[in-house]
Picture 1 (cartoon, rainbow, N blue to C red):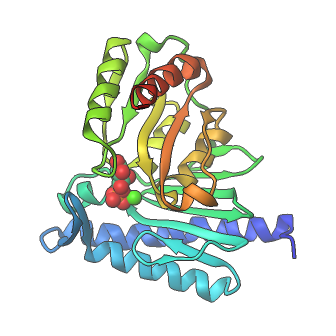
Picture 2: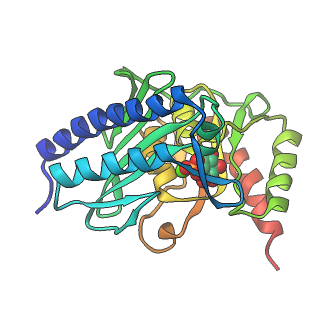
Length: 268
Ligand code: IPD
Ligand code: CA
């Protein structure tokens, strides 16, 4: 059965409350420090006790309130269904594990592959970034808009990196960005970075390989705040990770050229 407006509003309110609860659990561990670092999933890919606890809280709460919805999370995996919650319990775990206050809880709700709800909660700043498709984007209830930047030479671009993508490509991208006059940034949380684009504090976020749980919520924030993205289909390649592009409209064309030029250099 298709979801009504009321169904979506209920899920939105539920997701906001859940993100706040999840943030409180993450902050409890973050303030304690010390025992945060647990397992290395891969090179420079950490997971902490807090990731698992937050993951567990979110999964159980969704299963209890919406037993017919699918759930896909970074730490537990899952299935993409007609209606799916896509969750990163802590995005920016590398920062979190080192006691650096740049991480976020990311909760998205997707219907038929389209993200309808996107919540990114930064519990350190107590900033709740929210969006519902067609209803705008907000930070702590105040409307958000992407920046008015028109000149790439005045733009601040966050370019994320992980070992899932070739290093040479990343270095070439940085070279192009800096050569074009951009300010380059890297804060280590794609979800939080996308929220910063939506809020207009920075002008764009790009990364060569991210998973749906990292970005679905943040991409909806950017779109609803008036920004441009290349989207993220949950079907096909989207399940295995994709490149992400999100920017304010004023620098979309030159920034796409910078990112695409790099891709072209990789063609045989
Ligand atoms: C990572 C962060 C980082 C991005 C990586 C992601 P995690 O997620 O979003 O900013 O550059 O590609 O894997 O591991 O902290 O949840
Ligand atoms: Ca992540």
